Length: 232
Image 1 (cartoon, one colour):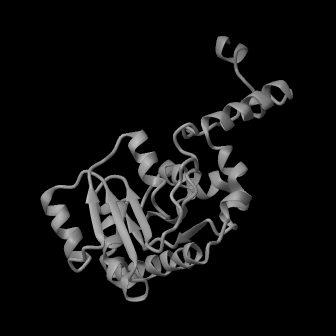
Image 2 (cartoon, rainbow, N blue to C red):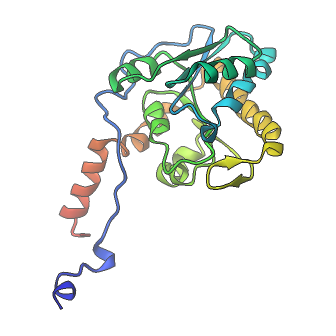
């Protein structure tokens, strides 16, 4: 009886996801493109993140775009670093550095051009939204939560490109026989974004307000509008 008394009707419940800090993740002091296209991944170094397949795209990318660098940010063991460099054919265009604080991450993102998130599973992938907020282009796998969060305007703008996932088992593991095609598809989407960077495409301005909605300030504005507008 008590539960029924305090039950809230479903139509009066709103779900709000996590947000990013707009004081850190923004386009202030962002580096302009200088002829070298800088790609970046940030996250856990593990098979489920697709990061070892990402390293395999380096030789494919460099054949067409020699002035390109890939930075992988994450705490990797010596064995993992060796595997990443081996997958990249030992290229010195692959850089690996340890995980960073939020402030250092935002500073580094602002020196980059394209963010890559090749994960086989992500609940949301908020780091990709943080990268978009810094004005980067992005390439990610088809992360359902991220696609839903960003919405049609951002998803169809060209600022982000989605790569089909390979077949997955045990939630976050890819079948080995599907990985070569995944590497090829990932590289192709990366090259689409590299072309946009080189051409000077300015897509961020048209979607900046949509991206801002996913900052903590934007989420608070949405909640306030729902309360004051009487929809809650």
